[in-house]
Amino acid sequence: VALIAAGFHNPLVVSLALSASAGLATYTAIPAVKNVFVSHGRAGKDLLKTGTPIIPESMGAIVGVIYIIAMFLFIPVPFISWFRQSQFALGGEEELVFPHTKFAQFLGGLLALMSMLFLGFADDVLDIRWRVKIWLPLIASVPLLMVYSVTYGGTDVVVPIPLRALFGGKLVHLGIFYYAFMAALAIFSTNAINILAGVNGVEAGQSLVIALSIAANDILQLQRNPARIEAHLTSLYFVLPFIGVTIAFLCHNWYPARAFGGDTYCYFAGMIFAVVGILGNFSKTVLLFMLPQIFNFVYSCPQLFHFVECPRHRMPRLDPKTGLLNHTSFPVANTSTLGRLMVKVLQRLGLLRVRYETVDKKRTAIDANNLTLMNLLLVKFGPMKERNLALAVMATQFACSCLAFVIRYLLVQFVYND
Ligand code: UD1
Ligand code: MG
Image (tube, rainbow, N blue to C red; front, side, top):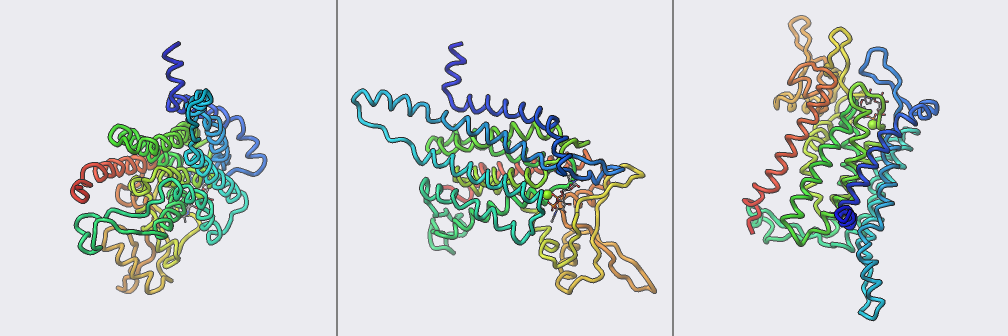
């Protein structure tokens, strides 16, 4: 009993217990509410199954609400020691100042997350236009940037040794550009999860690997870097409940899916990563954990910015005969000169499979695979089952996280050895 009581004095133990409870609550809530969602039109067709069954969508709303409840219940916990000490202080000792910045971190982070939850759900219901919704994470991140400026305020970046001659020193002052970078991180991370989607288990699977990588990095930093303990504890308090609710959601979203997260889940997950990166002041490390998303975004650019055709859905397709997923393609025929150049370059880099047709000895390109990581995996490794494609994306994410740890902890010594 004494051990349990001691454990409950440690906010991290409380956070772990709340994360597990939030996971259990999510696991039981999703089947309980799914009929309500379907009867109110919150459902989508599972496009990669024969007969395209109807699956309840926007389950990110349940995931997010339970996460927020867990966080609200947790808020007083890190401040309990302050409340105790301030009671002692009433006995005549000097007054203690309440850690307002730490409190503001929680409120700023939760405000950003709640805004994205609202936006994601609105997008699921109303299909907000891309050119409108792309700016909303930027606005949602403003309170977060305020908190950053009060807590850290630093906008100096340490220049890698080989580039120091170029920048004329060890530090470069980025000022407003550093804030622009953090706001861009919020726009990027939310949309990047949403465009690496469309296969059972992929949205939640990638988010789980990223969240676990962030938690592992926090635990490593807690041991190695005493000056940054508070920052990494805050990150853990935000990321642990997310891991709990995501594991629970993944149980229902894994092949064959019985629930979809919708844009609500994608935006919410993306904002979690931006929030911990900004509040913990390690946004560059968070980006390192998102290497597959960066690749998928850069690779998608010719389609996203309409240099080549971009169909409504770019996810792979099911071959009903074999039961395997194949890559999908976009037509090349009416592509602009710039678009054709991009197709050529990608093909040269071995990143594009182009199909040709020969008529009267004249060879013309017909189509090329849609520019997504999942289509590329199918081009490189051949058709596979939906479950295996989700596993392949998670394995890629895991391999990139390992690479990120090598860069962050080993290679970094060669570029920043002082
Ligand atoms: C993004 C992608 C789109 C991809 C879609 C799939 C870009 C620019 N947009 O669009 O290419 O096809 O996500 O989520 O890259 N679905 C399944 N199985 C799943 C998950 C989703 O069949 O495991 C289908 C369902 O019909 C669901 C729909 O995808 O209703 C959700 O798509 P939506 O989130 O509306 O697509 P976008 O985010 O606009
Ligand atoms: Mg989506």
